[in-house]
Image (cartoon, rainbow, N blue to C red; front, side, top):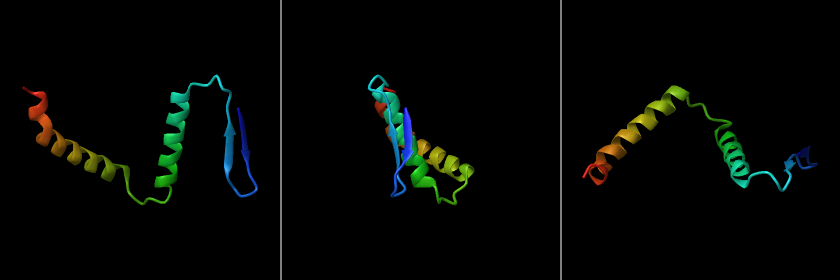
Length: 68
């Protein structure tokens, strides 16, 4: 694996063709998450509470599809 920073401040990562593409995609997704949340002022507890509320609402709207 080779990691280098370009002159226009980008990071280029070169990996072997034998590396699992699923693992690479997960790494890319995580990097996108870090980039998207880099300047967020949200607290983890707030995100957890929102996720719990959304999941509860989703389950209430969809449970009939699974409990038949």
